Length: 327
Image 1 (cartoon, rainbow, N blue to C red):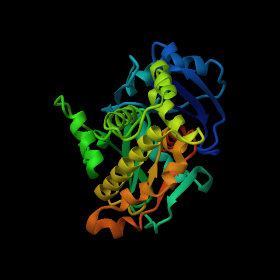
Image 2 (tube, rainbow, N blue to C red):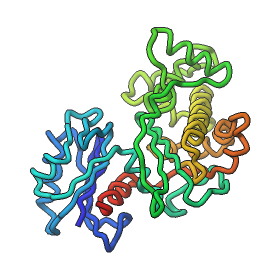
Image 3 (cartoon, rainbow, N blue to C red):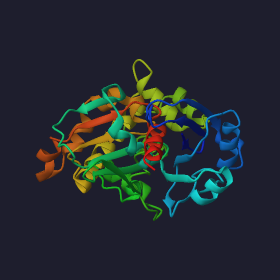
């Protein structure tokens, strides 16, 4: 029996899995508000008090870098250590991986119902696979074939330098770099990045900001949610919010193509994270694929790479379960 978890700054999802049922079929599951607990151990202990099955292994995908089996969770005062966690919980085998490694680990067990295809391509069996996931931040990971199965690898590629395409993006880079700070892809291609795109387009006069939207943004704690809703849920959509979303899609497409080239992702590219499933019509409109393939002499190669959006909401938990069942 395996205890698996998807650990984030807002919520912690835990579930029990068995080798017989596999990583897609939890036997029991529950979600907890992360900020209501002092540690992951406290959450797990509460969950296990109601669970009669004997747990002999555990695996967790966590929002933060994992080094030597230890992780400091982004946006939480938690430090998770495999050895200490196993000792306190009485579980012999414990694995902690980055949340993007967890999402990537789910890819080999996803089926057509878990995906929305942006470009069918012609995937190469056993070819490398890239995963890029814009949520609050921008996560990246990849998978390689080891001769018997796919194995996921961590990356912090979302913090690499933003490479602008076209006049609007050059202006965006200039405005963000004016104070001398580093401009990464995460700063322009994530939940924390979308307000930067909006502010730049507003300041440059790309479209007027309506009073109602300015008022909503002034009241909102989550500007990204307001901007996406204004671009996707209104009829007609707000012009400035729509321009922001189109710029985001173009930047995401370009960086997905960059990642595909760096790992030679002939097996496909998968978009994870919380944002892509919310903006499928914008991703389908064509600009994502154009930016993805706009790589000069490598454009023809990227035209053969399948690109999918992961629509399964518990993909990170599924991937954490797959990691744990292989311990």
